Length: 383
Ligand SMILES: CC(=O)SCCNC(=O)CCNC(=O)[C@H](O)C(C)(C)COP(=O)(O)OP(=O)(O)OC[C@H]1O[C@@H](n2cnc3c(N)ncnc32)[C@H](O)[C@@H]1OP(=O)(O)O
Ligand SMILES: CC(C)C(=O)C(=O)O
Image 1 (cartoon, rainbow, N blue to C red):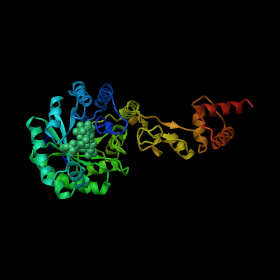
Image 2 (image 1 turned 60 degrees about the horizontal axis):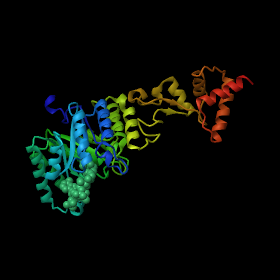
Image 3 (image 1 turned 90 degrees about the horizontal axis):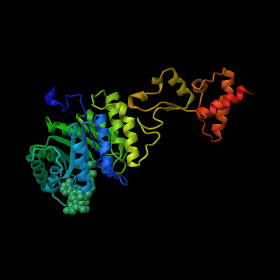
Image 4 (image 1 turned 45 degrees about the horizontal axis):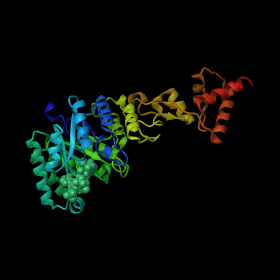
């Protein structure tokens, strides 16, 4: 089905990573050129289909970084650059040597009135001019109607048709301020897919209501076959759809086909966290330190018997680690395993004594490590 490699009949979903563009727009994140190249190499290793390397017109540094990333990985994956719908920005993408461009302009009333100060007609003209200008230079063009999800629907669809008439290769639908629910986004993307014909429809979701991942997979269910994501979900305000969450949900829950080497997700997350200076919450899905952590006795017992009792994904699938913890919620099965893994074998009576000691310490606020449990056991054995 090569002819419709990205369309709704294909089970293949493309991942466009925008960690180096939208992710970097997050306040406080400023990657150096070297850091951006390191992340780009990791994204290629991970298997993303497209890297949005930057916004060449925004600064000399971003221009240089985009060029360097293209030189470094341009033969391994598609490298795309952002541009406003104006000739200067498009020329900067061309000057950087890129073959793919992401052109955007807002189509919502609020953005057209207060930001662009353009009428609907002027925006439509600008869309046609900029997309056709980019196409006339042989570029692959992805068009985004910024703030699409707050745009008047008929005008939005007209804007999309205008971009397609001008030659756009892909249509990306940004939920720029994250106001969609999975239900409303599904309905919208269905309509966009209907007007897009054989063009790939892409989705770009923000997390203002914590729905970026859910909305992204709803967009795929509605026929989108590309998703914009960032590693760890970093990005503007509450961030973007998280690469690791979207990939694992599409793969494991919806059985789509992706190029991503999922066992590299944890190391990729750690790299971006280290270079961005943004820590990963312990409870972060997929890549958090607690994502495969178990303390509660009933859970630990289940995981010891069969990890699938409490792990919908195995940590090895994403390169993360299972952690069995001790605390006031612990049970005897977990304690037994933690001690036996350290060469200590106790009968049930002695295990109960050690467990009570652990719970007492934990309830007083102490953190109990495996070594602490071992020391308590040894003390008991020698008492
Ligand atoms: C939803 C998003 O994330 S969009 C991407 C946001 N990313 C960035 O802003 C990257 C960093 N930005 C920058 O470096 C700067 O904003 C630049 C270089 C792009 C522009 O800088 P400046 O010339 O100083 O303009 P400034 O940022 O103050 O205002 C934006 C201008 O772009 C115009 N503009 C905004 N979006 C678009 C668009 N899609 N198409 C055309 N013009 C646009 C605005 O109307 C405004 O124009 P004006 O200066 O004529 O009033
Ligand atoms: C440039 C566009 C796609 C964007 O980042 C947004 O609308 O969130």
